[in-house]
Length: 102
Image 1 (cartoon, rainbow, N blue to C red):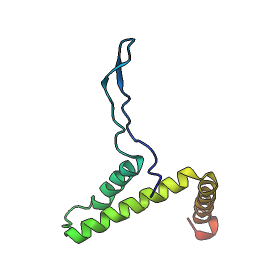
Image 2: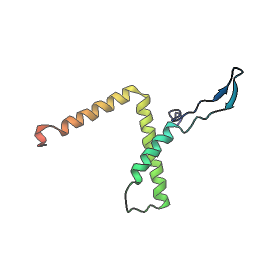
Image 3: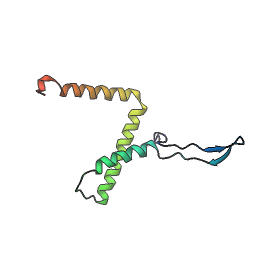
Image 4: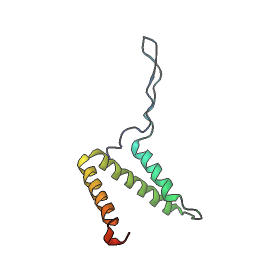
């Protein structure tokens, strides 16, 4: 994926005095894609009494980044975001309808 969402926690450079001497170059921090994937992986592995194999952990990592990529696509395209929000709200209304007996 070419657009990783920018930096999640950038730290700006520290400049000393009027001569603009850089004391600390700063850092870009982790990407937003990495941050989202890290949050997703916690949810995917938060099952007590489950032992994971290496191939299983690799699958979890791949899924986490696929979720992060999907979130970045929706975030960067307002039309996609609006469409998914409308679908989500329609599903909520359908599930709360009196005909379903809920």
